[in-house]
Length: 124
Image (cartoon, rainbow, N blue to C red; front, side, top):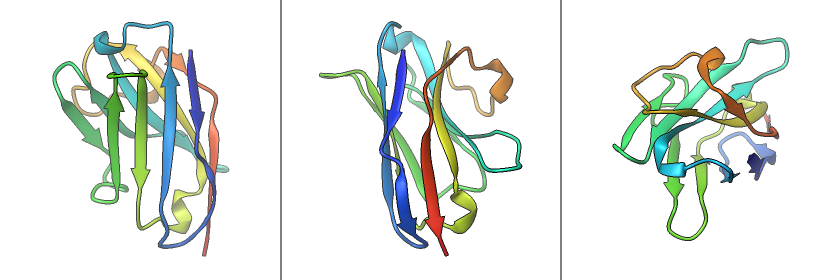
């Protein structure tokens, strides 16, 4: 089970931190991702990471502004720190999981488990 939270309304240039609580899967055996869908647009894989090998991927649209991290020390969770937010970052953000590693870009159709989304709205 994946449960995303932390979305909200923020002005352009601001920051938000999304969280995704992970349960029911062996956290270290899965790649985790953040995938977003803006109104009228296709889903976009924003980032992924796999804790077991430390690999990470970021879409060009967010590279340098977003940072994905994970925490399995006390509570299995992944986070997405978003800085310098832009109007085009407005979307519903989902966390997703699949067995294996984050080996670069993996299409949204290949992510097996999806959590509930959290709305991020950036005002210009």
